Image (cartoon, rainbow, N blue to C red; front, side, top):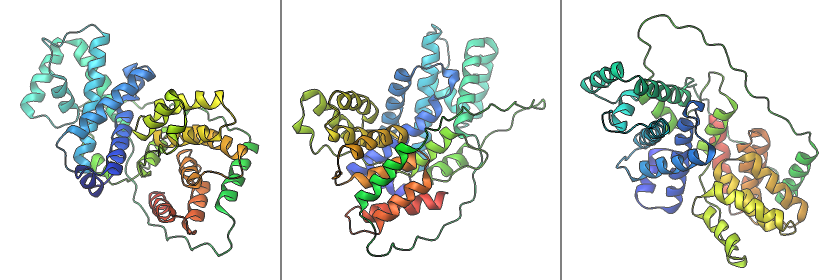
Length: 363
């Protein structure tokens, strides 16, 4: 997300609205994914959507401001959930926005003083603040790395294999590979900190880095890598072209994905595809929904069904398939697919070249 995208969003461009919403939700996900919140998946997803919507309705007019707005909105909802879980009333306790402001270092010195004074008397609020700090640090941990711009790939020679054949071969190869079980990352033992005031983490610098699409260096986790890849995606919503051919529930699921509710649509379309495995279009719509949601693994599973069912894949298959590979962190394979598409005369060729360049610049 950059200021140009935000400008297009404020001007009412539909594609820009979808891209901004997806990236703000990804930022909210970073904050709310901390296990200390003790949020179940359904509640967390609802709070993510609310936080993204609040940020979009703010008067923020830059990528940095929108990013901070999303973090703040997500943090407030996390604190609100903690109070509800612990049976606390808001009366007699500081405003949620004020507590978040202290955590984000945007509150005044006087506000900070009164909040800290309240913490001396209210152990629960202090405990909630600790959870908030851990969540924000988890969302912002790691330092920015300098980026090296890679040269653009040379155009593929004429006579290059058909794009659909290339995509089918990659999908077939994927099915033959042994499924790699990703072991959960080992937690590193934390070093004891020296006594004294903790160092403040630079929010403004982090927000600028996130807004500029800069990646991190300090041993990012697999989830952080996925989050970063999501910020590089174009944020395009799946087209609902054939939705009218289906019964009401399936039609609504396809339209939900086109409206941005991609995770719910992906789950419903997976069920619809399982009920009618011969209709590869359901798997195709499911795969696009998962790409929209940022879940490359599930998208590839759906696209593999498309490949197995037909030799005439849908028109946009290669474009979405390349994104799915990137989101599954199979970067080299994804770039190969995008390069192949970019070297063709396909209408999505320019989009493929731009995305490939963006990924190379970040990696």
